[in-house]
Image (cartoon, rainbow, N blue to C red; front, side):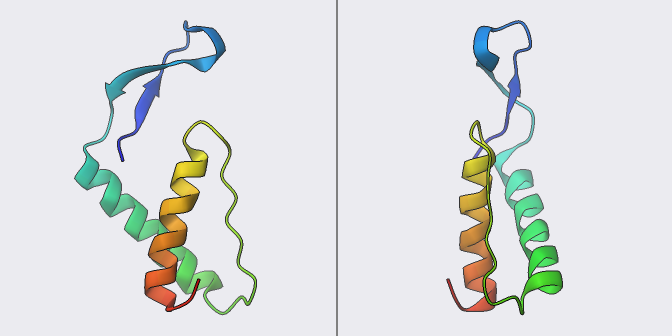
Length: 74
């Protein structure tokens, strides 16, 4: 997954395709975020992640996968 910089001058928030973080760095940050969520909310029986469209939904799906692996549940 690669974050892309938003083009402020583009219509409807179109993406420029410019890489702002290498994939390895984004993976490391995502793992740290999933670890922090697991530590704080790992015991919550109904943990739900919500991501806003335009990349937030992709991040929520990736964090969901990482949390499922760490917590051993979906």
